[in-house]
Image 1 (cartoon, rainbow, N blue to C red):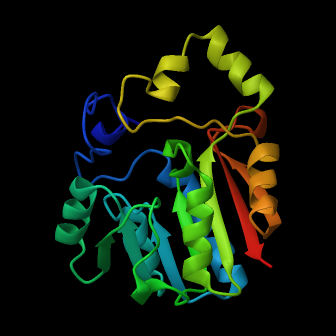
Image 2 (image 1 turned 180 degrees about the horizontal axis):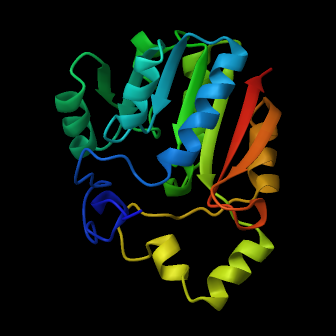
Image 3 (image 1 turned 90 degrees about the vertical axis):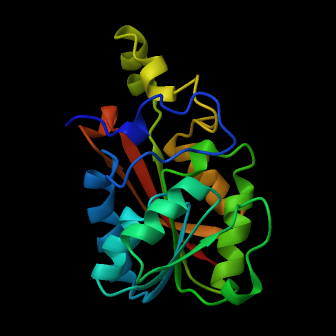
Length: 215
């Protein structure tokens, strides 16, 4: 599959994560089915999509019957999302500040797809999720997978630069394994229910997805 321009090095210097088009990124094809399955499994209806970007996943969940709101700090992403999906509510909000009062405690599930690796302060994502969920609810996070064999393979084929986007402002700054991200869930008061590696074979997976319940 050809990489969409959003996944390339278009945004080398910028004031935000720049979204260049309305196309889904290559990661959505193997992440979205798992997210949908886990949301159905948990019975959630009201969902907040933190870091919704150009709104593609937000739209797919709306089509599946979820009452969903998308938030993102990127003005370029939200402009694309609002134009393509005017029936969905999108708000500009970054994870570094509390959610708008109207969103607090309203949701049964929060998703954050390929977001946490872009955050210098990843715990802020969990704080925003807890504000959205109130006392109970589910949090589903996906992020690029990092394990020993995967990183060794990247080094052998000289693909670190393509994988990490080092020249792109607001690119990847955090690199998690299942163990480290699970520890962050637990530290922030979420019990991990299930994990999944997706894209390629598990040892060389492109991404991992973790599902946790607020306790």
